[in-house]
Length: 297
Image (cartoon, rainbow, N blue to C red; front, side, top):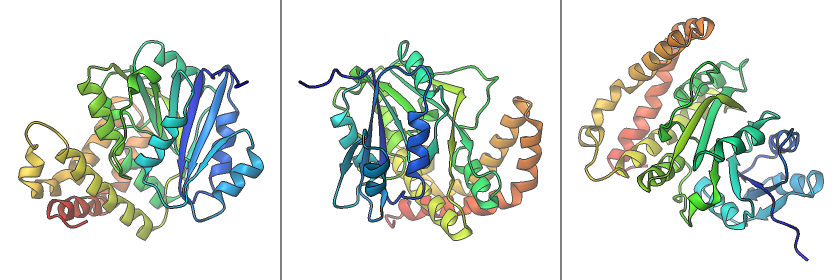
């Protein structure tokens, strides 16, 4: 006889995460007041990720795929197998806090989908910190800030959905911006969103100058795809893509204003000190965007 369906399902896509999947899953299982839940890992790795999950976390529902999947396709496989009434998604490079499931579930009692903020899990790495500020400048934790309903702030590193809200909707087959595009479709369908800036997970950022530069370029390509998916008319940045050379200055300005507004003075000083490097690195995002605008990815 099959076991009763759990209240919550957690879906985690993986690709070559042998060094990080153990800590990620331990943080998921170390929950307080979560009720019943299941964990689904969708793995398409060429390393030992699947073996680690089978050996150390036998209760996890492991979906092992022979060929590499994009993040969007991996999540779709997990969503298809999920049995919970509420479905939470995160990544293998994330550590969730012990009250994560309880707080996400409480939000989902009131709205259709929810997202939380993303904290820097590599504070001692210069390149990791720079990447975190650039990639998650909209998602930095701010416990004093109120919740709001802007879906642009919901990232699949820290998100949850009512099962009924998904209604057979799928992520696109992509590894960048697939979450932004997906959440646009939910809003267009009239679903209610909430972003909680005080509900933070810890992100283990990529490190190393070359690795970070490549990642930012891929994010730039994803930024172009997201804008290209908007309807009915293409935004100004697609009609005049070279305007995006100003984007690094806008990001650094937004980082500084946000930290000052929330009175996070230490972080505001950090942004000022790091601003030359932030501007230089974000040029790789711009390069990815411009390459995509020319049809070269």
